[in-house]
Image (tube, rainbow, N blue to C red; front, side):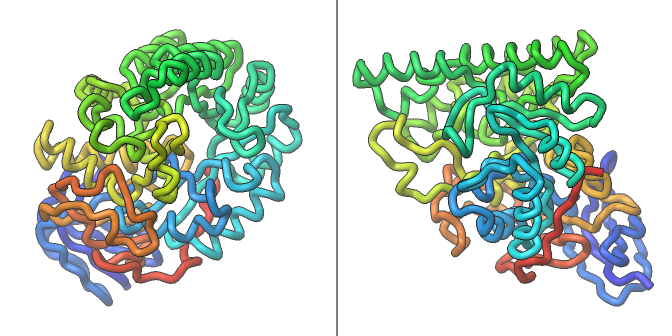
Length: 448
């Protein structure tokens, strides 16, 4: 017997089902239809709300500050925002995920702390060990991540070109992408030093301190390294359209090259918003001036693989230093990503197209990219991961989540849809007001 019926405006991979319903049995979607629904043990009618596939956020940093217990506040923020699966980066405190024993420990933490499902990246130290790489692959990591810029010598090191080639060759034939944090170390160090010597340390100089050429140089080097192999090269964040064009050129050469968009590049303009938000808006690569419209066109032309949040919920004291060069990079985005993207897309395309675009870029595309074959779609056989977005204008308040950092660059923004409920594998984990499921409900989802 059908256990649960959810009713509303159902957003599938190709269409919007008005007066639609989703049938759920055993945590899976068993049927999707319109009009009269099957008999079920429970029915929840959300009226004119959008029923979207739960977002799959392809870039979060749950353990960067407090280690694996960070899974608790991060996954709670996720479900508050309609995100049902996070793909977590490997740069945890104090030890990155470079070997099977660390990965097993992180999986155990997911099953202890998480309220949504979690897939995981792996990484390598500056001198990669092929046996450790294979161990992470065997345990189901969905991708690997490295950086051309050193944020920390142990937790977030720079991986040089020789080590990058070693890893690329190890990933040949596996289907796993290798993601890059794409900034050139020497260019950034030089640009930053010049600005500091001139006393130019305000927030308005962040983009100049990490100029576009640093981003493009690192991207180009990495893509050329990957082009000498049969591996899949992926850029985890590009802030300017020229980077996406570069990736497209490598695909035109027959290489496996992809690139990802972070939602904040689509919502903020450095010239307008950096003077107002200062260090709260610091991310790397930086948010640039005058690029928002061009980056939306990148999405509309299909040059971007998917959209992610790059969520990192630093405490406020790490974001308010007088010098922008001493402010931690990263900002929370899980709670706001889905309504923010929908709202901005609706202004460009209208609500119906925004719903389809949101389902595509925030659910279907990242699920397929990371090999999460039962995630990302409202269709029979898929996990019943559902985000309910009510057509309700509201102002986002970052202080409403008692376990959040209490700040956000999105704080005070007006959104046209509000997360009204979130279901993970058919169970309601957020009711629009509070978390309704205990930590430990979330599961580790290996690449399939």
